Image 1 (spheres, rainbow, N blue to C red):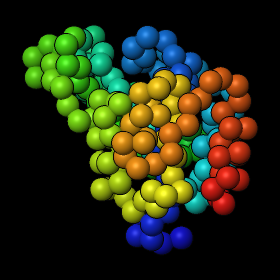
Image 2 (cartoon, helix red, strand yellow):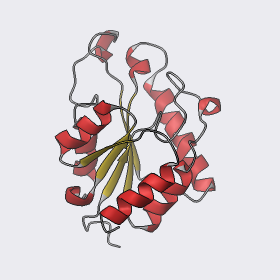
Image 3 (cartoon, rainbow, N blue to C red):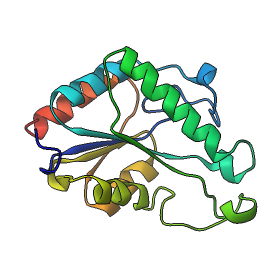
Amino acid sequence: MSARRPRPAAFLDRDGTLNVDVDYAHRPDQITWLPGAVAALRRLNAAGWWVFVVTNQSGVARGMFDEATVRALHAWMAADLARQGARVDAFYYCPHHATQGVGRYRLACDCRKPAPGLLLRAMADFPVDAGRSFMLGDRPRDVQAGAAAGVTGVLYEGGNVDALVARLLAERGG
C-alpha cells in the first residue's frame, strides 16, 4: 500500500485503553497491556490502517517527569509491541495542563484532549481517510477529541480490546 495514499486511522488513547491505567505511568515496569490490546494493534496493522497513540501526559506539566521520559517510554512500548508483531505508526502526547502545570507547561493548549490537536497533527503528518477513521478511548474527552477532529469517537468501557476493534473494522469495511 502506498505510504502517500490516504488510509483510515485508529487513534488510540494510551492509559486505560491500551494499557492498565496506573496514574502517571512513565516507566516500563508500570505498563501492563490490556486484554486484546496487542492483538488489536496487529489486526489494525494487517488491515493496512494507520495506528496512532494520542495521549494526555499532564505528569510533565505537574513536574513529575519530563518529556524525554515520555519519549523513552513510548520507544520502549514500540519495541515491546514489535517483539509481539505489532506496530504503532506514531505516538503523540500533550505535556500541558491549563491549571496544574508549572512553567511553560501551564498552558491552555489545542492538544490536550478533548481538544483535537493531537489528532489533527497526526492527520497533517500522515495521509488519513478521516471518514473511515475512529478515536478509541476510555474517557468522554477522547470521544470528544475524535468528534472535534472529524472522526468517529468510540468509548472503550472495558473488555477485550481486540474484539471491539474487530467490530469497528467490520463496520468500516476494514
